[in-house]
Length: 334
Ligand SMILES: O=C(O)CCC(=O)C(=O)O
Ligand SMILES: [Fe+2]
Image (cartoon, rainbow, N blue to C red; front, top):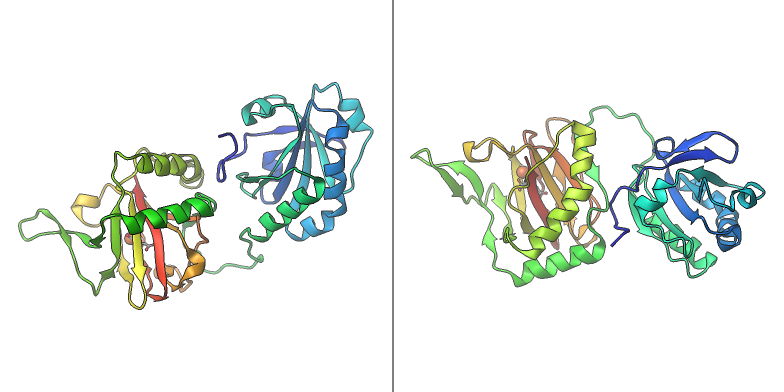
């Protein structure tokens, strides 16, 4: 599959119609609707450009640019140079982009890219109107925060769209059909040997350990590898080589929780470098926040399919679920 939610779009640079330099680094920080024309004639994409242009003020409200990418050696460059669409940036870009993307040059394609250059979704191009509506819906669901001064930030990394909603649902079904165990904690016994200690006052959770040699594990690892590993490298200069056991977990109201702890204190787990917590059904429960008390009193509750990644040394807590059940995927990178 070529276009996958959460993957980074291949890097792209080129010259915009006004002769300014454009690249996905100059684009970073704003979302974009990216229309791909490659070597196609202008007439194939013009109706889409016009429809997006007409809706450009709406996209501006979502901090979203509209970018039309044309191959710099396309025979149709003169056609595109003669056209302009208000609110659409036409870029004549290096050809490798289209090859890396897997563009077929049979028909135009388009996708929504988030502020970090990740592909959120390929767009439905049945008609210009459906394409614009699809884009509006995708943008409305993107996380956005008003700019504000931040006093005490916690050093966390949030990676949205690691899994799509359908896969999150599948994981919940798999969890419910699978053998479950009561969640325990890595600890050290009297004899100095590692033990798995159960203490419901500290941690109340039901776990399913994804079998390491299963297709499911491979599929999850592939997604973590493409979506999260590059983000960890970018943010923290750490190249994760391994992923610890994959746990699907359920915290049930009224008391499912995990009190404050660090993830790499017991000798058996000191190898852990970064923790990952990925919510599978955020809108279906109340409570169940993550907190990082060393930094601030904020409650963190990533959207369904988004991962929160943090150093395994940070003190953190999963607060009680007060309604419903919280399902999540949990693992560690090292
Ligand atoms: O529930 C969570 O998101 C975090 C779980 C956690 O901290 C752990 O399993 O070590
Ligand atoms: Fe933890």
